[in-house]
Length: 233
Length: 234
Image 1 (cartoon, rainbow over the protein chains, first blue to last red):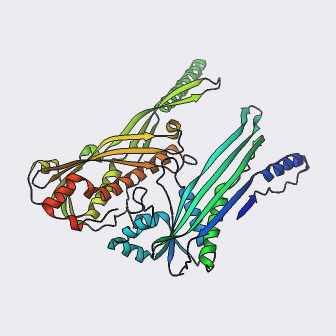
Image 2 (image 1 turned 135 degrees about the vertical axis):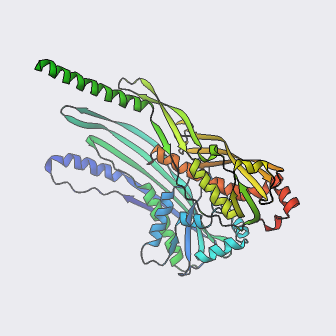
Image 3 (image 1 turned 60 degrees about the vertical axis):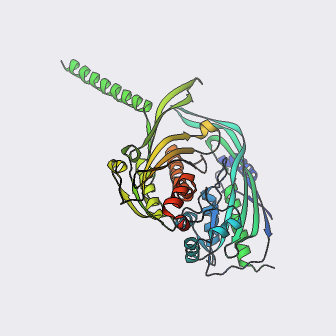
C-alpha cells in the first residue's frame, strides 16, 4: 500500500502577497511524503478485546535507535477511536518487567520469549497485565540529504532572511507482531517513507516540512488496527 | 562641582557596566553542565536470592561527579575559527546509589548498608559483602563520533567478599547508554537521558550477569548451594 500526503497551505487574501502565495503553494506541492506499507501475515490470529497489546522499540543497534516518539505515536493512534484495542505504554511495560525488556536483555526471537516466560514471576506479571501481543518496532528516520543556504541579517532598519534550503528525510521501520500465548511471530509489517522538506526565506523563513515520521506512524498504526479488527483468513 | 559629581557617577556606571561585562565573559568561559538523572528506578521482577547482603557505598561512589573540559570551536563574524573552553559535569552519584539500592533490595532476601569497618571484620550477619566503585566514565557527543546519538559508558567494579572476609571476586561491569537522537534535545537533556539509560543497563547487567561470573557462580555452588534458586537466564 503506497500513500502520498501533502501539506496544504492556508489561503492568503492580500493582493500584494499573491506572488509569495503562489511560490508557497508551489513549494507546498513539493513538500509531500510518500509512504509504503507492506504486510505479511504468517498465521491467523484473533484479538480479544479484554486483552492488551504493547508496542516496544528495538534499541540494540549501535548506530541508530528506534525513537520513543514513534512508539508513543503508534500507540496513541491505535488506542484512539472506539477504544477496542488497549495499548500498554512502552515505558510502563518495561518498568513493570524490569530488567527483561531492556536493550541488553530484550528477547530477539520468540523462542527467547518462551524461555523468559518459563520464569514464574515474569509469566505472572504478563498475565496480570493481560498482554496478548507484543509489537516490536525496529528502525529510524534519517536525514539523507540537504542542500541550499539561508542568510539572516539584523540592522538598524530591521531584520530579514534570504535564501532557500531543502532536505530529504527517509524512514524505514520493520514491525514484528508476537503472540505471547504461542509464543511466535504472527505477522510482519514493513514501512518506508520518504519526503523532501523546503524552507524558502524571503524576509521570513517559511518552513514547509514533509511530515515523514507522522506519515509512517499513521501508516503502521492503521495497518495494525486493521489487522486486529478484521478477521484473518 | 556638579560637573565633577556627574562625571563621577558616569565613571561609576562605566565601571559597573565593565564589571558586568567581565562577569558575563568569565561565566561564558566556565559554563558548567550539571546533570542529575532522576533517582527513581523500577523494582526488578525477579525471585530474590537467599542471601543476606551487606553493602558498603564509599563516599566517592555516592558523590561521584564526572568532570572534563570541553573545547568548542565556533566561527566568528570573520569566518575565523574561535575555540571556547567550557566544562562538562555529570553528577551521577546519588542516582547510581539509588539504582543499586533498588536492585539489591529486589535481588537479595536482606540488604544492610554497612560501614567500611565491616569489610575488615568477620561476621555471620551477612553471607556476602559488596563494594561498588566507578572505574571509568566516558561520554561521546555526535560532534565527536559523527553518529546521531549521545553515548555514555560507565565501567563499574564490584568487589565481593564472603561474610567471613574471604575474597570472592572483583567483578568489572561495563554498561552503556545512548539517546535516541541528537535532534530536538538540549545537550543537558540528552546527557541526562543517556545516563539514565546507562544506569538502567547497569541494573539489568548486574541482575542477569551476577550468577554468570565464574568466581561468584563457584562460590554460590560450593558454599551456599544456592544455584537452584537462581533465576534461569538466557
